[in-house]
Length: 288
Image 1 (cartoon, one colour):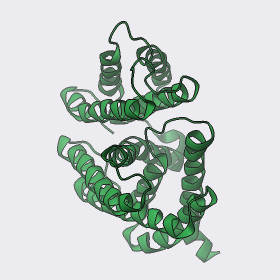
Image 2 (tube, helix red, strand yellow; image 1 turned 135 degrees about the vertical axis):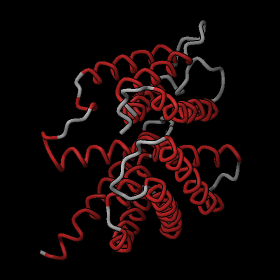
Image 3 (cartoon, helix red, strand yellow; image 1 turned 30 degrees about the horizontal axis):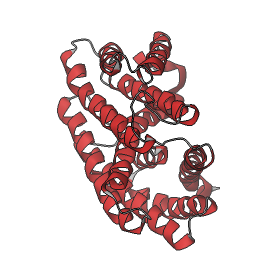
Image 4 (tube, one colour; image 1 turned 90 degrees about the horizontal axis):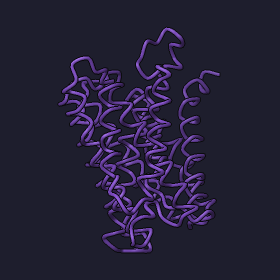
């Protein structure tokens, strides 16, 4: 029982990683959709942020075979699956270590621009290291493939990780949590952003993409940093569904779906970079 107490959270993280990885691969390989972010990376970094550094070795030992097994079950040769999983864990450890250092502790939340900028830098450096390790073993050795891999992981860490950490905090202390993200009005805001994205990503007669940026800025100023991440995740969900049913995440662009994916990833990374100054400029903004 004592061993299980130590293994419980690493195993839960591994199962969630595997579930999201399987969903992503299902979208790409079975449904023919485009992946804008590699969601499992956000899960892994969140797990390391939530775990004491003294237990990182145990977390790594548990995650490595679970990640490799998931990728292997989806058709990747086992040696290559272990290489990808090793690259993923190196990326995770680098991003988590630098992120915690930028925050000043794993229990700290980003309240200052310096801390948020540090988290951005941690994600960029970690994902660059992971991409450099993995890319030589990929079938396609192109700049576009490298850019997609890099941006998909960066976006996952910058958007999904803070949402998962907040969800864990809220579940841990229950109804006593007083956080702007519990405001029901944010659900209406996200639904509005989803509807706007459906239109903006398909209409070619008028350039509506700047409206998506404006909506993200509004959500950030009104609800805080985590709302920015939720808004971008909403855009990702809409774009992914469009890629399945319309053949491209940005159907209004007259270009192949892969190129359109890179364009939209660039837009979303730019949006995420806009959120810290927007939040800092708002006097009463909750930047958690």
